[in-house]
Amino acid sequence: MSALFTIILPVFLVVGFGYLAAWRGWFGASTVDGVMAFAQNFAVPALLFASIARLDLGFEFRPALLIPFYLGAFASFAAGWAGARYLFSRPPMDCVAIGFVCLFSNTLLLGVPITERAYGPEALAGNWAIIALHSPLLYTFGITVMEFTRARGSGLSVGRVALKALAGVLRTSLVIGILAGFSMNLLMQAGLVMPQGFWDAVDMLARAALPAALFGLGGILYRYRPEGDMATIAMCCAIALVLHPAITYGAARLAGLDMAGLRSAVLTASMAPGVNAYLFANIYGSARRVAASSVLMATALSILTVWVWLMILP
Image (cartoon, rainbow, N blue to C red; front, side, top):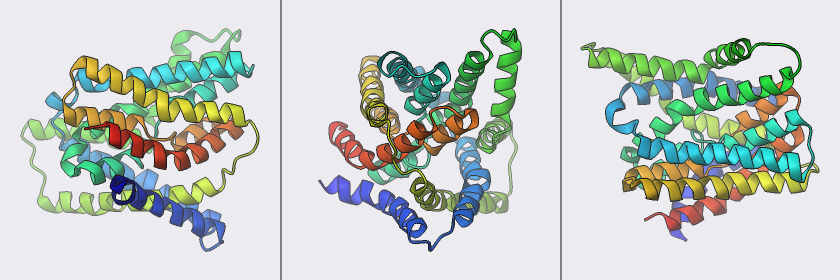
């Protein structure tokens, strides 16, 4: 029970404070958007840049860590897509959007602070390795599947659709921060030494990322109040909060993943869908209500489900 109050609750109290501020009108919608724009476009990319630039690429990017997490993620997409198609008879583009909700965990804004509070900053190396691939890989996959679904019968070539998806991913600020971090890491391995003042400035910006993003997340979630489609939303919550971490846990155990990696992989997989899942649905005008409500409800439910996974992990 102590983990619930000392590890999980502080993170969600910050989210809840942002929700309360937006609900009571203390923080207007445009101000919330400004906080999130600062966090997502500047502070979080700086955090990703600094973390990946200092990561031991040779050790952390190992199959025993990455395969279990992404096996669970893609299995969750397949389960969400199949449930939307065969249980709820949703249109094809809705099925892709619902699958993406089940696929895209909130690895950064929730996964990092909870893992850090549970096991300390030194336990985050596995999280950063997963996060480094998360947005580029899953956005490319999601956009590609959606574009193929939308372009069916239009005569567009496979290469053209894939190029369009890749171009869209490479323009996002998070991916730019990740790629810049990889570049700096390789340059430092080649002998580049940056002045301490540079890293102090980057770290100052990075330290603002999670508090600002969590508070802004609360304000964003206030907009996404549940409306209808409750059976589909319940399916998305169950897949994201139970199926994904369960597959990750089983596969990681079979792969013989070390304890630090197991904690990073399973806790990251157990996070609720991120707000980007709604943004993806909104871009294509598909299953927006399901996506928005799933993000909100799964975030609230994850207070308890993450606690259970913390109890399961040694």
